Structure formats: structure tokens, C-alpha cells
Length: 493
Image (cartoon, rainbow, N blue to C red; front, side):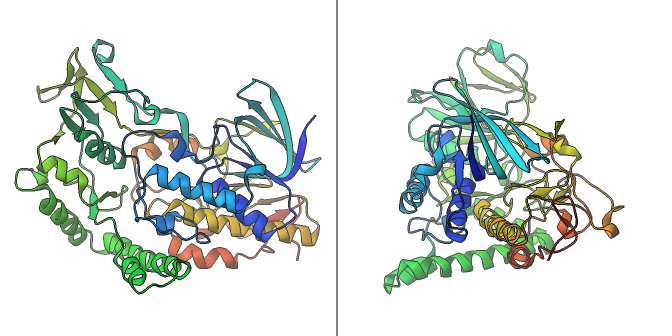
């Protein structure tokens, strides 16, 4: 027995909730369900429970365009979950979500023009089956159950506790403890100030520095508009546009005048960290700004605890773990009661789901991406992969608009399936890895590049990471273009 829906959405996080909202708003009457492995909504914001967890993007753009954000730009996980809960409640979405359903395999049949998904009900172990004409993958891009931890010598010798932020114990007592946080990205920058007030001392151990952007956790334009009692329904889109305009200008400067931006960012660090910190050693990366993600530090809280002596930064490499801490390649030893491995996550492109297309196991790496959301050889499926240099949600909603338009077009022409295929003029174009490492090269992508689809030489066959052009391109995608193959044939008007 199986349940059938027009559309199945996998994942009830930021992307899945966006998909559901736009589907029922733009295509009323479409039947759909959301399959979520966790026991509640939120995705990342439910999985991660480490101290101080907060967004690394502003909520005016990380929030939805249809739901005003009224809190501080950088928000806590609790505030984000509350916001998502309001969206679900206000739009009657709860009845569509099947919590505790772990999807294990997905099978496409061209004979039936149908996806069949098998899911395990985690509470009972029972297998359930769902069918749908269209599959919308909103499960994110990393493995929620297990974070990435490098293999270090002597880990088993350490007598204290080792914790990964992704699986933070609810009962972990950090009071009075010596803590070493391994890592230098947004997670480490969040955990260090959150722990500093309770533990004896916290050390951020990094192999190399990261760029930080230090800003007050208020938006001056939003505050000014509220002072003159402008309605929040108007404030939200105005501030959103201002932020997006400023982000675009900043990213262009990072590319065109990287040294000037670098000095501006380092100037902020010097102003907040004080004279006792070696900024050249600990906070000056070897790469240009935005070649990896720039971590946001609201109100400079990381640098305040460093300046006050509650935290410190060590830039070195790990030689091995010891019974009492970490021995560095320089010979120094950092003593610790707790070691936090804020070392990233494992890329997981299709949610550990076994995919087959007409009985053949899917090798996702061998597909070619259409705009980072559809793939050659995979009919009736869209995958949401957001932006690196802008809020994830921006792309979730662009894709949602596209999917709704695509489904409406298919209904209008009577098509049961669609997949992208290079035009005749593009058949011999050069194929490259998903992302150009010269443009963006964080560790998780470099480790997992072999799992990701190929990209081509034209914009249609790339995930460009360029919201500021895609926001105009996506609404104008020609669904009758020959690259869209409907029901095994070429495009229909």
C-alpha cells in the first residue's frame, strides 16, 4: 500500500517550508506531503543545539520574503524556529508534514512517470511507501547525524570529553572547565563567546585564520523606519532590498579590490580585539575575502571575550592528542578538560537515499546540473542548493517560483515528465567540477566534490552563486526552450 501525492517534498527545514508555502499559494489544489526524518521542523536549527547557536546570515534575507522579520538581523536558533513555527501555523502546513519518516530509497519509473519513495517510521521501524509525480529535494547538503572530524593521532589517549557541535550533549557541564575549540569558522566563533562566561578558559585552536565581519546586531535603516512607525509589512522588503544591494556591492569589491576589503576587515578586528592580539598571525587569512565564507560576529562578542582574557586564540597544527590535551607541532601543549571539534560537516548530497532511475542506480556525480537545481538523466526532480555568498533562503524561493511555474506549464501542455538536456550546440561543451576552487573552496566542498554533479560552460549549466543575476533570470526561464525534454521528446509550446 502507498499514499500518492502530486508532489513529495523531502525535508521540513528552511527550504521545505518555503516549497510548501509557495506550492499551496501558487498552485492551490496540488496535493503534497513533506517527509521529515526528525521529530520536528527546522532542519539545521533543530539538529544543532550547541551553546550560542545563531544564524550567520541576516534574517531579513534568510527569512522569507512573504513573512516580515521583526527581530535582530542575526538571530538565535530559538528565534528562527519560532519564526518557522509561525509560518507553518499561519499557513496550515502542519497537516502536510510527516515527522519521523526517514526516506531510504527513491525509484523513478518512466513507464509510470512516477517516483516511489520508501521511508522508515523511526518510532516504530515500519516501512511506508509514497508515490508522486514530482520530487522536491529540500533535505540540505550535509549529514545531520554525524559531523566531520579529522583523524588525529592519540585521540583515544585523551582522558577528557570530546564533543562535536553537531551532536552536542544536552547535559554537558562546562562550568569551570578548560576548553579547546578546534576550528575557526562561524561555528567556532559562535561557541567560544557562548562558553567563555561559564568555563575557566576557552582556547580557539585554528590551523589557519578566517575572515570575520564585525557589525552591530541591529539594522540602522530598520530602526529608523520603526521610529517613525512605518508598518513592518513595509519595513521588511525595504530593509531586505537595502541589505541585498549592500551585499552585492561588497562582493564585487571583494573580487575587484580584495586588498582594500581585506584591510577594512582586519581594521575592524584590530579595533575590537585590542593591542594584545597578534592580528597578523591569528586573523589574517592567506586567501582573498569571500574565497571562503566570511563569518559574521555580531557586536564583536568573540573579540570581547578575547580582549577580556576569558578566551584566547592559538594558530598552529595538531601533532597528536595526549591524556591531558593537545600537543601542537610547535611543541606547545594545550591542556583541556573538554575538546570541541568545530571542524565542519560531511557533505551529503541526496540525503543518504538510494536513487534509481528505471532500475539503474543513480550516479549523481555523472549528471550535469541545470542551474544547480535540475540534472540530466533525472526526470521530475528539483534539488535545493542555496547560495554561499548570500542567504540560502533567497535561492529556495527562486527555485520555488520556478517549480510552480514548471508544474503549471506541464499541466497546461499535458506533460507527465520533464528533464533537462543540453541543446545540440552544447553537446560537446567542456565539463568541470561543481564549483571552481579558485572562486570558492571551503573544506567541506573540496572533500565532497567527487559526490557532486558536473557543470558546463554556460550559465544554464552552472550553479552560478549569483543571486543578483538569478533573481532576474529565473522568472524569465523559457519553459519551451529545447533544453527541457518533456515526456521523452523536445519542448512543447
